[in-house]
Amino acid sequence: MQNLNRIGVIGLLALVALRVGVGWHFFKEGSEKIKTGTFSSEGFLKGANGRFAGFYHGMVWDYDGKIRLDQDLMISEMDKAVERAAERYGLTQEQIKELDTKKNKLVDALKGVYAEYDEQIVKLKKGEDRVAKMEDTPLWKEVASLRGQKESIEKERIYGIGPAVKGVDEIWKKLEDDINGMTTPEQYKASGAVHLKRPQEGLVSSATVDRIIPLFDITVGVLLILGLFVPLAGWAGALFLFSVILSQFPGDPGSQPTYLYAVEALAMIVLASVGAGRFGGLDFFFWAWRRNKAAATAAA
Image (tube, rainbow, N blue to C red; front, side):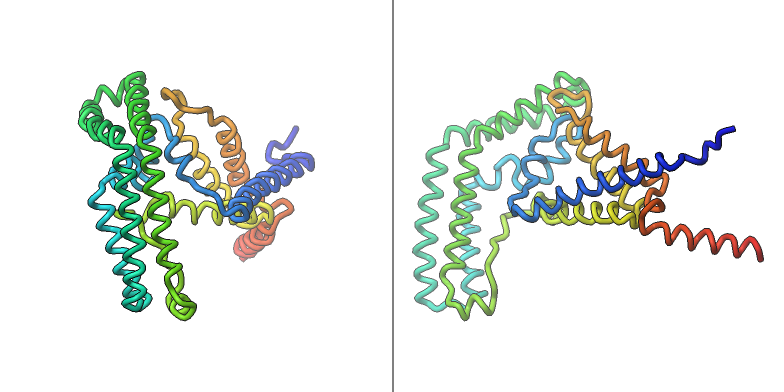
């Protein structure tokens, strides 16, 4: 009678191949993100659809543009940025005067952006009450077609102010460049580069995700390839992939297919569940040590 606890040589080789293949995929994804230096999770988070879309959108700093389109707030933040830079670098009065001149030019450019896109900004603000009422009405969340309509309205509003938000971002980046360009080599060496913190940005944001994901991918990939701590790496990778699937909740209006992610997530669950690192991997030594210890205990 066939022993169902044994999968045979071909089965073992298949598990090893699956483990190394999935591991290589994760490793390459992570290394490419680091190599190009252009990885950003913002597009993925903004593109989330379905019942959990709000959670993913909430990780995008200023998702609806309300912060960047607040003229008084942004001008105030630019003033504060110059003050902090002057204190950090110990700028001379002449440097501060020059930086103030550059900042004032950027403030004028900022006002120009708000004036150019005034119609879109007004439209965005007028739609806030409508969206807020939808949020407070359970029907708009419970009925799939209405939920899809609500998400379409929100995305249309965000899309409309996209150029204005981009203009504000470019001015903010130019201010950062101007501050770093004002310093002498000695000042720069003493304090390093300035990275302007975006107004009201929390600890958990797309910027945090951008730093974690490449390292996460590489770590999971290396562990799977080496066959080390495979149960941990497998479940971690599977949960990550399921989080991607939930960003496009299956069956909800507007959601994109995520079958490929689901298949790889299931493969990682298999690898984790059977302890695939025991076969041609470093987990074999931990597995052998535990078996020897259990045998010694039983013999005693």
